Image 1 (tube, each protein chain N blue to C red):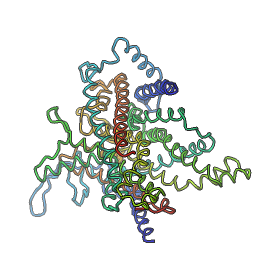
Image 2: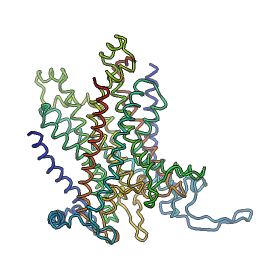
Image 3: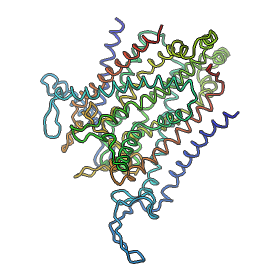
Image 4: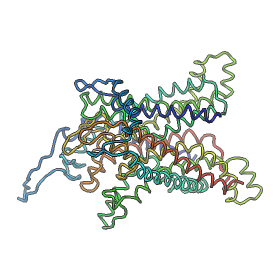
Length: 297
Length: 316
């Protein structure tokens, strides 16, 4: 019962924020003369009203892309699947790499690799993506080998490998550092010393005594990890020009040429984005559950 | 002892790099080789031996006049970087300090006065509410707030920077506040706080003479980390054409220019140049990355300095 009550507060709350955030471009206006800020609540509420009125007759799910009127439902399917594919891959591969490399880092010195990971981790996501694109162009110029597609220019040659690598590297990096730190703390605990004194093997202790105590930390940190993945998704889809949910929001928020703001597509896009978040979260939780099955006794 | 010397290396390297960047931001406009509106035009130059060559923008880096080259419109990149540095650096530091000051105060008060929540359904419900909202990236929220006012604004670049600063302050305060709250909750359970309270100290007295002194290292690290986060946000926003100080948009073909030559703005404006004339792409990116690396080193150095003091040793 309590859970139901929690959800019944949570969903309206989230909807409120989504409607409010999407309203921002019409709500916040600068006066064209002296540039002072104005809040035009009337226009904001008008777009909200239009949205709800449009829910009934389906207008809220029609949007303009260039000069063509399109249906949200027709497009969201493939966009959502594309984004989900990246989010799920980033989540699972990122967590897996993070766990195992993190354990390795906590056990060995690995100075150089560790400082490389730290260095990459200190750079913002988009810098890493831009450097990767640039590196591919440089390699192509010097050696005449195109390693990866740098961006999706037409639908026949989508960029897949490079965006995928970019999507995985960043959460994996975050996970590696988190797990390594937590693992090092765990290995200082007395029960590890006790297990060692009993003559158990190093790997056995790490995987069956220490890891089960690190997994809860990973679970607790999942929302933060998902936050990183979702932010990263925006950057990656935009820089590689891949058709996912975030590109649906960005390319259609303002109608080309006329520059009219489409409130409905932003709201729908944000809601699909949150659905994507929950789906990705569920995938990682399932993955951790399976992992726990293997290592928890 | 050997460890200690090594620890300081990170910190010192970071401090030198960060100080160098701040110095550039201070004196940049005075040492810039050209005026901001100096532009290379296409011209035919005849050398001393009679050979002629064409100078046309973009000029490649390495020449004496234009050490970092010029952009497509013939503006000197070094000059642009030197003029834009003050926006990038001082604004990010200012926003970070303000975030930690406001968020820190809120966090201290929340951590000290609010009763600790029992581990129960209510707490988890609240936590998951915020964490689901966490699924909407902060820069998207800022983008939505700024995109309506940032294109060809009537306000001055300084005023536009201040608006962005306020927006970034508001979206950044909650995370700082919750971090500080967590730390406060731990310290307020310590015995010296109980002792102080039983001796009759009031709330502000305890915050002032026990909590803040214990948290001042955390605050310092938090400021440096917030600088990095703000710089990251500058960069992410710039990719989507929201520049610090406003965006000048030209039509036919649509082009977005930074009004302040702020570094992230230069990256956003030139990010498609990696196919040809690649220096236009990598010069601002390198300057920006160097700035972030500097602050990251400071943050890491500080953490090492404060954290390793009483650590136990790993069994392996």
